[in-house]
Image (cartoon, rainbow, N blue to C red; front, side, top):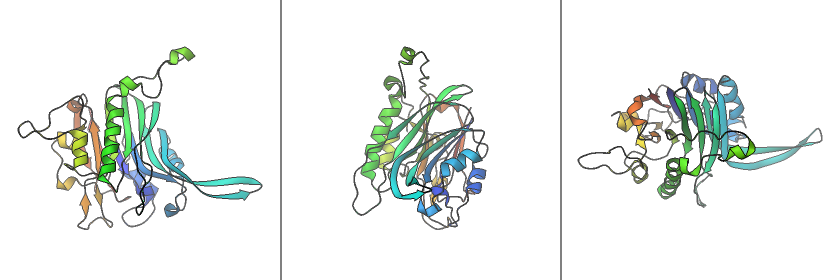
Length: 287
């Protein structure tokens, strides 16, 4: 199975151009796609409905979308009908296989005064993969405050690691005459975490390195795929300041899995040839 995570920066690439076709081409072949910064009604891309566009571009895929930030822009009247235009900013998951259940996890946030701070979220999808159901998350953490990211990671880890105990989106469905969705232990947590490796936020996610054992597989710590495969390096950056060839490069996008999936990891890479955003797609392959 191939998974890819891509912060698409509302469709605007390294060259400042808006081109959804090149974004779609750069993630072709993935079985499951996690997108961030998917917008509707955003002035920077002429109010384009990216959800409808990606649903059309990947018409054979199942998809879900969640916008943790949703605000009214303006109201007009056309042919006697009230038209509301809203700005939505969120996460999307597309899958070759049916999406059985979803949850929209709103992450902790605090009000800022001089910097933009949107409500952030994580979109959870239980997917009927060929080898059995698996959970996939499309995540976008705060970009301004490490303290806010720390609180978001603590909340997110609680939801992800306690998923079975919490029951996901729905339990007790037998009362209404239909089956409960599955509650899989295995998960893939992908997205723009706005944190670099070995930062305090990153350590809060995966745990500290032991001086001798490095990071051992543990039930309560997600596993960084690139790190597990020995592929985490300064060359694995996932964001660059446009036009992409300047000195400012950072590793902000990550993919984490549970310890049970770690032995099935086959490969991972960052596609630096994809120029449809200021981020680059992060791919992982699982047996």
